[in-house]
Length: 264
Ligand code: NAD
Image (cartoon, rainbow, N blue to C red; front, side, top):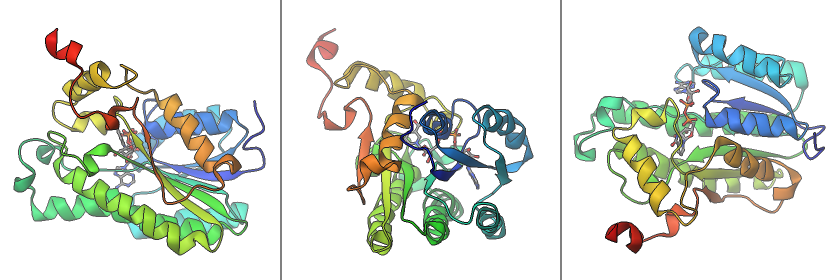
């Protein structure tokens, strides 16, 4: 165990199972000495998250559905009562109706647009505000985004629009909280096989396209995302805020498939 995060306490939101990006981040933070609290969405997920939290010594495990603001407030009241203050927060939460993660963006419905935006974008603002209030010694806040925010990815649709708004939120919140020494950043991860990831139609094809065409010629692991998260959440990242940091094997820099791939 390194001591990079020792003495630091934080909340990780968005572990559904051991494939979750939030779990890769949590395990890496714990291996560097962080003390963690977790939230879970509903009892079915709770049963899966409990043994994971136990395995990294996480004692605080709290229910939270971001559609229910009272449950969000409950989490931060408990954190305040138990810990007094926190040092970091991870928001790895997104949702959209998978019937709209295929076909045309133009066919997105009003109801799913609003729900996608609330869960995948505005929840971050509500949570970051409550977290920053508990960061009395400064702190670091992180969310997860995807490159479908600025470039068109097949089937990503309304989620791309929500991620664009989420990334913009990162910049506004970085300015809002910067005076209090609270940093706000996002990791833009390459495709990972998770529950949420599999909701996007043909996710498998995007995964293999990235594998063949990114500079590193592979996808990223949740541990690699965890490593970058740990840097941003630790004092090593103390000069970084408002940043969208790609952890995607370099995929975002390419403009077309590799020629040897095209010729193959
Ligand atoms: P995941 O399914 O493991 O995690 C998604 C989490 O969102 C789950 O824990 C789920 O409980 C939570 N969630 C959904 N609706 C919620 C609600 N109403 N209240 C509380 N929690 C809710 O999938 P993941 O891929 O690890 O997703 C984590 C984050 O990473 C998401 O923001 C996702 O968009 C982002 N991301 C994923 C990929 C990928 O390819 N998987 C790539 C880039 C970014």
